[in-house]
Amino acid sequence: LNFAVVPFASGASREAFHATVQRGGCYKGYTEGTKLVLKTFKPEYYRQGLRVSAEDVDMQKAVRQLAQEFNESEGIVGDSGQPVNIHVRVASLDCFGRDFYDGKQRVFLQNEKFLLEQEIHGTFQKFNSNSGWTSGDALMDAFSHWTWHKTRCLVVCDLQGVRGGPGEPSYGGTKERYYYLITDPAVNSRDKRYGVSDLGWKGIQNFFAKHRCNHLCQKRWDRPQGVSHFKVVRESSYDSLLGISKPSPSARISTLATFAEEDSEDEYTDSDGNGEAGAIDMKPCNIFFTHNSINKRFSCGRFIQDTYEALLYGVIGVSAIPRMIVTFQDGKLWTYT
Image (tube, rainbow, N blue to C red):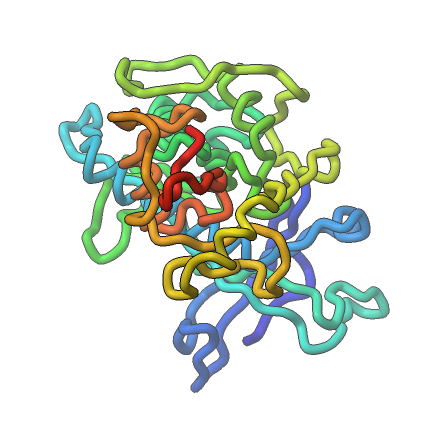
């Protein structure tokens, strides 16, 4: 991989460098001659502890999946009468094998991680931010709103990239003229699982405190109560700079340890793996409910079906689901809820 040590573009917190796959080579799945963009945090942000990570790549994959579902389910049609789809570029993660210099000034550090993605062409625009700022683009704001309605646990935001139209290049092999090509988005999630640009639950509330539904937002779409926690800005915001920390894991339920002693290992498994008091894994078919029916929503407001799909597509992890508290009575396990 050949890459420049002088950035061609600079945002509020990151710098972008031109890169090209060497002749006769292949790098991270990119073939010879492919034009790429290498992204790192600016030195002043790197010194404050901000890093790109695998969480950024996982987040981009989740956003791409949600964008595909949005295209299929909502079928947005533009003023031209043609469909307008959202496409998302997913980066690769790598690190530098040594220090790199621009003259005597060190630019990249050994083992410093960077994101690498295919170059995009067209007029670059910023549509909204992860703190709630918006340029007023109706489709991008509606997509952000829809991602909450779909998952009940996250908001895709900090949307930026190229909006196709007259004077802009067509997209991909399909030669779409009207489209959105998004790069380097962010996600605010309940359990803050998507890196330093994930502002967590406060970020979700802050976003909806400023969001105003437009003609593309459906009345049936759910939205949480908006609450202002911090200043709304155009540039990306970061957790550590706003004093936002990742939620601590749910406390272990020590009363469940007795069940592991009384029942066979194939039915109940100690998830701590140390035989001590703690949470255990159970087969759902062995758990009985104390009510005759089950609400279609969890206490947090998420639908059961939406939660299932979010788990299926990797939008959320198992750690985002609260543990179930059960008790042993008359030879059976019963939920408290």
